[in-house]
Length: 171
Image (cartoon, rainbow, N blue to C red; front, side):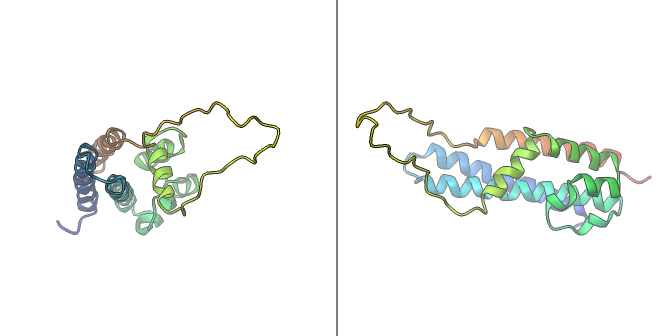
């Protein structure tokens, strides 16, 4: 049983839960540097991506599609892969991923950001005719991603996994 595909999904969901717990503790402790919060957020995203990949592997493995050994979610959750080997579960995942503001699309977007190099903030060129004192808009300092949002993604992924497993049982 330990080598079954579903065990990886379960493991990654569990690890994401642990990372979420550490993230919340880091946010609650005022002594923590923002780096600790960022580290836990990134660990959580890493495990959530792994859990989604695990679920994709469960579906593609059950139907023995050519993508069953893919190394990324993007290789599996695209229209071409679905059309080559259609299934109800894969179709649902692709549909959610293609929706711009869905939890899968947001998860994949936040995961991709982890691999981008840091960039300094862009500054507008100074026009010599502008006044020296000007009003500025203070940007919201809250992180773009919250632990509650990731927990909602985790629960959605867990629900999908349980529902898919009910339909993908062999009799």
